[in-house]
Image (cartoon, rainbow, N blue to C red; front, side, top):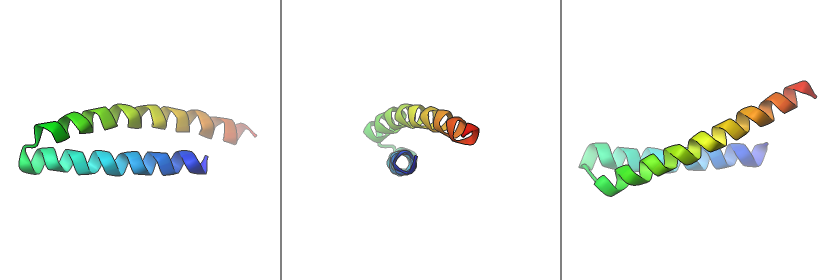
Length: 58
C-alpha cells in the first residue's frame, strides 16, 4: 500500500507540473501530458480505493 501511495504522489506531481505549464505558458504538449497523467492517476486512485477497502476488512 505504501508503494501505491508513492506512485500516486509521483503521478500527481507530474500532473501538477504539466497542468501548470499548460495554464501559465499555453504549452499544448504539456496539456496533452497532463491529460495522460490524469488517466494514470485515475487508475491509481481506483486501485488505492480497492486496497483500502481490503485493508479495512482485515
